[in-house]
Length: 252
Image 1: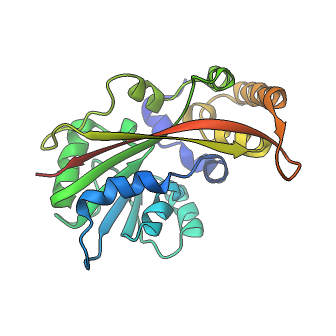
Image 2: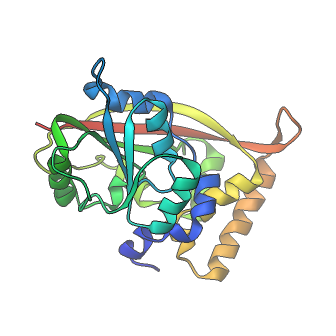
C-alpha cells in the first residue's frame, strides 16, 4: 500500500479522470464560504489551494472573486489551465504558499485539508490572509445512508476525507478558533464512464497495483449495471447522493 505522502501527490497521473469523474461544488456553498469577506465595490481576492484540475476554482470565479490557484502537482495545474482560463497558477502547498503576507481575503481548499498538517497549515493561512480574512474548507462526500452507495465505497475503499468527516471534523491550528459549518445535500446523475472515472481518480486506486485496480473497476462496473436506470435522453445513468460539508474560520 502506498504511503500517505505518495497518495497525496498521486493525482496528476489521473488528471483527466479527476476532471471527468469528480463532482463540482455547489455555488451556494462557495457563496457561504466567501460571505464574511464580501464588501460592496471592492474586488475580492482569493486563493484556491490544492486546486487540482480547477473543480473549486471555477466556482470561485463564478462567485466573482479574483483567484490564484495553487497545487503541488504541475500536471494538475496544466489541466486546470485548460479548464479554467485566465487564472494564475503556482506550485505550492497549504504549508508553504508562494504568496505575499496578507495578500488574500479568502483561502479556500476543496477536498484538500485532510492532506494538510493542521498546525503548519493554520500558521501559513494566517500569514497569507489579511486580518478578518476567511479560511474555507469544503468537501463533497457521498451519502452512504443509501445502500448502493455503501457498496460503492466498500468496492473502492474509503478515503482520508471520509474518515476525517466521520469523526470530529477538520482541525485548524492557531490563530484560528472554532469553525462554523454548513451542509448541503444534492444528487449527481452520472453515466458509466463518469462513475469509473470518479473511482479511478482516487488516490488509493491510482497507487494500487494494476491487478487490484482492474478488479476494483470491474466491481464498480458491475455495481453500475445493477443500479442503472434510463435517463431522460435514453442514456444509462445512476444517481449519486452527496452532501457538501463546508467549514469556515476567520483570521483574527
